[in-house]
Length: 228
Picture: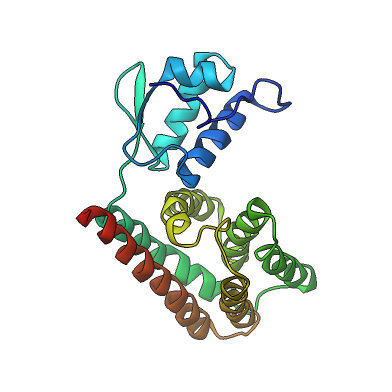
């Protein structure tokens, strides 16, 4: 199928071709420019992005490991479908891994780490959707950073990337009122305050409430899509 307008050329960008291709396809999936179930050929994708087949294949393998893409054959792929079972599996693992690390990180930050947490909190409500979304992603990473090791980071990054396409459905930063922007900020401010206290149980409870509320809203949205 033709991909005109769904992905943007990266041929003139000055960075790793694989990283750029991965980023652009992820953007297209997360924003819905490439919707769930959409099939496309590697040849068409290479032409649209302005690169060879080699970085395309490597980028698709990365995205497949994140649950965003399904590689069909040597020459084609599709966007992974959305499902409640997929959503629930992602969040089940987040509860098991993310909550204990956030609890273990509570009260363990020096002044520079606290400043970083505050900077990311502010970035999460930036008017630029891309800045806001990156700030939100990095904020959740910072909540577990003091206690996380390299393997924790690898697993959590995979889960967060897989969760992003679901959270985009309900918490799209390009479609947001000022009241909703403030509501989201206040929710994350509560997590920030809990992170500064030396109370692991309170931190874990705050993060569980935050994640489960998001999961419930997303599940309702996905069920409506599945029913339709």
